[in-house]
Amino acid sequence: MTFLDTLSLSFRTVKSNRLRTGLTVAIIAFGIMALIGIITAIAAMNQSLKENFSTLGANAFSVRYKARNIRIGNNSQKSGAIKKGAKKEKVSNVGKAITRDQAEQFIENYKFPATVGLQLSGPRSLRIKYKNKETNPDVTVNGGDENFLSINGYSLAKGRNFSKLDVETGRNVALIGSDVAIVLFGKNKEAAVDKIIKIGNLPYRIIGLLDSKGSSVFLQSDKVIVSTYNNVRRLPGTSDSYTINVKVDDLTQMDPAIGEATGTFRPIRRLGTKDSENFFIDKSDSIAETFISLLGSISGSAGAIGLITLIGAAIGLMNIMLVAVNERTKEVGLIKAIGGTRKSIRNQFLYESIIISLLGAVFGIILGVLVGNLFSIVLSTGFVVPWAWVITGIVICSVVGLAAGLWPALKASKLDPIVALRYE
Image 1: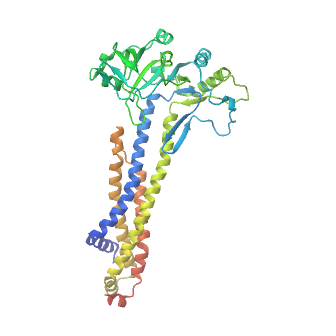
Image 2: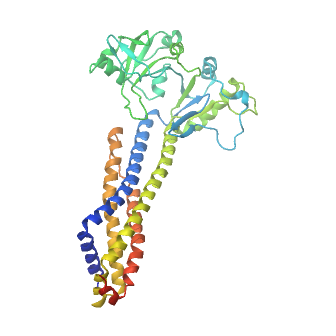
C-alpha cells in the first residue's frame, strides 16, 4: 500500500472508534491544556508587568536601607540584593533605617545632575472618607516632596503640586489618586480639588487630582493618597525609614549616577573604607525583573504538570492500541493474506496512534490558549499566544503518539497470518 492509502485507512479506523478515540484525545488534550494554559497565563502576567512597571521609568533608582522582599507562594526573592562575591555586612551595619537627617543630608551633598526626592511609605489598607462616602480599606498613603510626581511617573489632572512650604510645614494637604476620587466623588472626580477628606480621623485638603496610571493585579497605582513626608511621618503605621529617589535625564547616566550616590551616601551612613554598604540601590525596573524571574519558576512547574499528564496519556494510548491489535487480529491476518507487508501494517497502527495524539494536541492547545487568555482579560493585556510552546506541544504529542504506538504496531506486524485468520 502507498503512504496515502495507509494514512487514509488509519484515519477511517480512528473515526470508526469514536468513543475510544474521544476518551484518549480528551486525556491528551487536558495534559496539553494544563501546560499551554499556564504558560499563556504567565505570558499575560509578564506582559502586564512590563506594561505597568514601565510607568516607573527605567531612568530612575532608589536608595533604601534594605532590599525589597517579594514573595509569591513559598518562593521569595530580594530585589537589589548584593552581588555574589561581595563582602558580608557587619552585624552593626544591618537593618539601620535611613533617617530624615541622613536623607536630607544626601540631597544637600549629591551633586550629580539629576532630580532627587524623598519618599516615606505611610500606612496601608486605609479607608478614606468624604461626608457619607468611604473607600474600601485598600488605599495606600505615601509621603513625598515636590519631586515625587515626576520621579514616580505621575501627572496632575487638576490642581497643583506640593510647594516647598507644604513640605517644610507638613500641613494636611494631599494629592488624590484617580480610583479614590471616583469612589468618593463619582464621575465628577475633578470636583475633588479643594474638598476636605478624612484620612483616619484627620482632615486633609485635596490640592490636586492625579491622572490615572492604570491598575493591575500587581500595581494599584491609582488607589493612593500622597501627602508630604513631613506630614505622613506623624501618621500611625508609617515606615521608620526614608527612601531616596533619583531620576536622571538620560538612561546612559544611570551607572555614573548610582556610583555618585553610593560615594555620597557612604560617609553619611558612617561607613569605613572596608565596610560593606548598609543600604541598597534599587532600580525602578528591578521589581518587574524579580516578579518575572519568580514567574519563570512557575513555568517549570507547569511543564512538570503537563509532562506527568502526558506520561499518563501515553500509557493509556498504548493500552488502547494493544486492545485494538487484539480486536483486529483477524483483520491483520486478512491484510497479510492478500499481500500486505509487515511495514504497511506497522505504519497503519503507528499513524493511528500519532493521529490520536495530534488531535489531542490541537484541542488541548486551543483550550489552553483560551483558558490562559482569561488572565489577559483580567489584566487588560492583549491576546497572548505562546507560539514556541504551541510548537513544542505539537512535537511532544507527536513523540508521545509514536512512542505509545510503536510496541502495538510491532506486535501487529509480527502476527502470523494463518494464526491471525483463525483468531476468534
